[in-house]
Length: 97
Image (cartoon, rainbow, N blue to C red):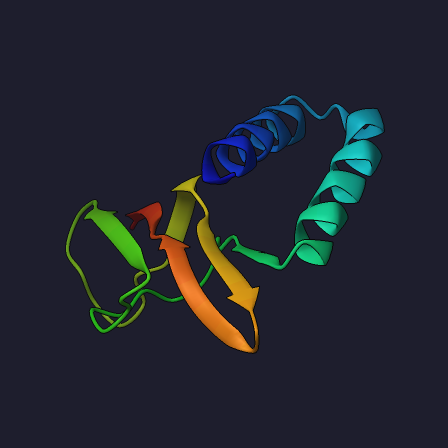
């Protein structure tokens, strides 16, 4: 399932990059279905990066400081919630500047 989520995320990113808004409504529905199945997909774009973050693998461009932000998400963070237990299925892969 993580590979399917990654492919949907890649398609969503491509459509947003190309300003193709008419497809995003359908992708929002797919994300909603993932959530109904217990998957939580986190896209940490724009968040301040901290070394303590254990759910992302970061490629740092330039010097790391307090103001460093996640500027690009290559793969989202994926959790699965089942029986009130949250499991990390995939660490996010991000670019930090």
